[in-house]
Image 1: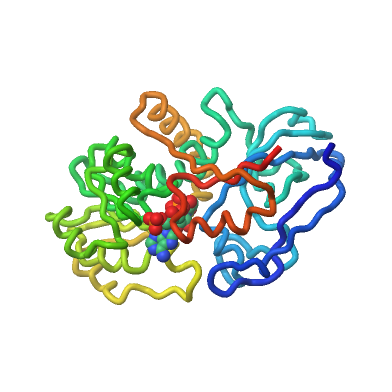
Image 2: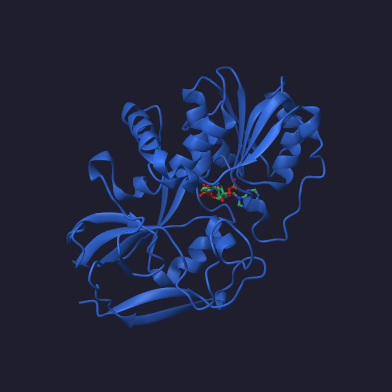
Length: 334
Ligand SMILES: NC(=O)c1ccc[n+]([C@@H]2O[C@H](COP(=O)([O-])OP(=O)(O)OC[C@H]3O[C@@H](n4cnc5c(N)ncnc54)[C@H](OP(=O)(O)O)[C@@H]3O)[C@@H](O)[C@H]2O)c1
């Protein structure tokens, strides 16, 4: 029987890629719920590029993880003990439980998993924050029209793969940028993209010219850097750039696009958005995503790594070396 809680704590602010010395694995006695609280045994950890940004000091959309604190993470688990009237033992729940085996929660921000809609990992992928980011980012910020050309960077990832599929569902053409021939083949043959460009080998400018002869109407940017610069040079008049993230910049001092004046030339906009601002509309997004999954118009892909809490640091690095296809999840060994 488990008698201790294993945790992964941030003990130093990384410079560049996070390294082993930035983390400490600690063990504590199993937590007990206080009045109005419950304990969750975490089974699935969502591994997100944004984690790297939460490790930095400085202004962001959430406070940084403090030195010595358990690393912040979204997860899914079962309630194992409760003194909360709204959460019963055995219920499967999703919340920001941290990189630890057991978490205490007062229910704030915690949702119950509708297992009828799909298994737990799906609720971290296409039916979770990734799917919702794709849904609201593309449809609310990018606003593609039928026939538009939608370009997506990080296209074989969790958010990007859903963006391209939603673009297609809405009658737009979807072009993906991803690393490697296998990912590009998967995007076209399995995820239904119209075209995919391997940024590791291709001449991005030439490929964009070939695949978007009339220009890019919507660019959903997950990556920044060279992809953003190439897309800026190919914008259609009135284009919308959805600034979802900039994973190519998370481990370096970010650099802005030198050619940002292309926004002016194309009368284009570039809009940053944070999915948490759409919290009140999540039910609308989940309803559409569920329906598309049910009808087979949308496919979800989860990349599940099995291991323990001590495997979190290495699993996080997979995001930055392109090791994942679809939603990266650490499934904790029982
Ligand atoms: N705005 C919001 O509210 C919000 C919410 C959730 C996520 N996001 C953002 O959405 C983006 C995607 O997140 P995700 O969870 O779906 O991750 P993901 O795309 O599943 O994983 C990250 C991918 O980024 C690519 N990548 C890593 N380093 C790169 C580099 N130097 N250059 C180009 N590509 C690189 C890798 O694919 P390749 O093999 O193709 O290189 C990797 O698979 C991130 O920028 C994240 O911050 C934003």
